[in-house]
Image (cartoon, rainbow, N blue to C red; front, side):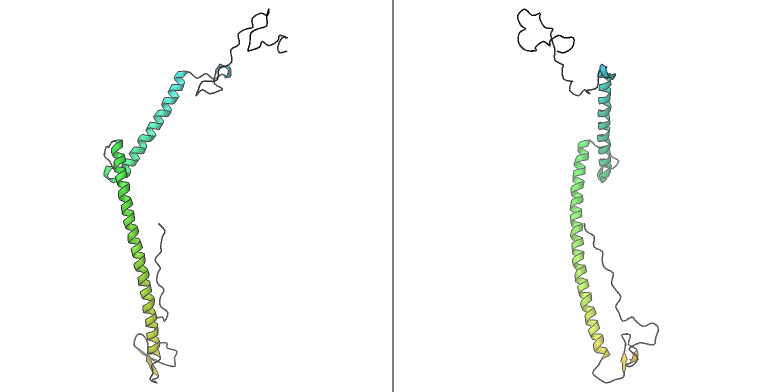
Length: 188
């Protein structure tokens, strides 16, 4: 038995014969959509409809301001619209045109980069071939078939075969070719 020794009245079906009518029991209603479950007088939080409306209006104003600022930023990013007054539809149209233009321009630049890379590779290949030919020509010049004791260095000055090929002048060229700078390739 619950509370005060009285039996709980059945919710369904007719009351037993001769019994007094049971008090009307109303089931609790679920909370209204969008309301906070703790809101209400029993928790000390009362939020009037006006407060809810004001809060909603503030959020909506903030959302609209964000959209407006975003359109202004987009407008200022498009060169043909900078500083001009334009509708949102015009801003979107011009932004679309500008994006397509920039994509075409990027594609053209990428093709130019690829062409330059191919040209660079061919030129490096030619440089290696010329260096190889030069070194073989220098070997032939340093070891001629005649038995002369004097040779000429790449500058054309005479050197002795017994001094190791060094020139007495201080401005002699280094025998090793200077290293070439490599073009740094960046992934795009």
